[in-house]
Length: 484
Ligand code: BG6
Image 1 (cartoon, rainbow, N blue to C red):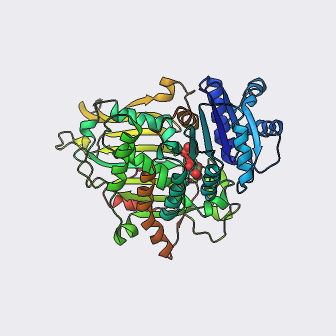
Image 2 (tube, rainbow, N blue to C red):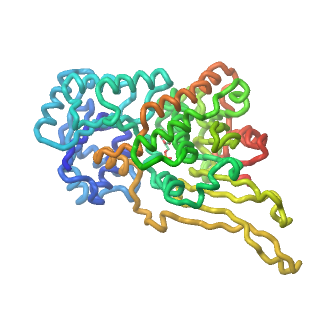
């Protein structure tokens, strides 16, 4: 199946950090369909050869394991071409159309890896130049808007030009093998389903912790913050995967319908819950792995009195029959104690205790998303206490390491998602109504913060965030998994 992939933002960060390495991996694995052409679009005046050199140079900055050898790059770069475009100029789209018309392909993918403020213009211009054919697919990177109104405006503008089944909204968390494993765990096994409900689950904790700070993205991050950057999209998608009902089949809309129901069932915010159940923080100087690191306000592009949050922790509920009353805690932040993304499902204790040592202990399922991809099931077993000649219960765990089992060379998130776009599989992409519901739920938090003079709470880099986060969960009688 032949295709042309047009990368708007072809010289930008996302292209060289994520997209080119992912395309190269697919090329190396032999999964990139034959007859591919990758056209980078940018403002610079570059020849194809200069573009190839630029991308080659950038590969020196990506993970060693993802870099091509000179020989591999020489073959891969034959796919790369470059088109210089001013995205506001209609005649530049005509030029692009003529270039695409040079050959007949099955699919043309327009990948918008630019600032979202350009999405509307690009789509309108593509339509004006007749580039929205039935063979065209468009990929939209996050963040898709800044709030509910801007998200609606972008979706409406794109929807004027492309039908919903041509639109691929990326949330790269859905492309992670570990997140697909979560779907497999829930809907490929019968074991957990009877337990996956309020009667057996005490609480669920979703953690997405990063060690990195904002790096060179200070200016972008200042107007974004952790709520928009991580919670509105990645965290809520994880919450949907955990909380959704089994879909009737594996088709994109069957899955997306169920996720949408979860988003619609999220407990609405009240002034009390906004004040008590949402904590925002901002990293101060501290140390990560023994290295001193500066605070957020000292980062490049960040205002010295910034009120942007780099950490969010919150408590919510899914108000339906399966989950009513079960707290879901979400926590994400930069410059935390470790790079660690995981979902912890804490089961209720046994209804009647017959072992003394059981007090305070309950089963727990940990779904490790990264850096390691696996499952841990924490159970209790009987151990002998030799001195007292008696039996006591001791914690044991079943530990599944998927990297070991399936090999560390697994298909990465962007590689998987790009191949899905080319093949026309929408399962792992987000529908516009999901995004709208997610923004609708997030907006009261943004409004509350806008009116709250307090601003984010500082936390030391290398910690687990503001101490109020532990106090929030302790009010329910629980603690975060690393404190247990
Ligand atoms: C991106 C955010 O969507 O996800 C970044 O914009 C964040 O700020 C990144 O660092 C985290 O992704 P991952 O795959 O490294 O967990």
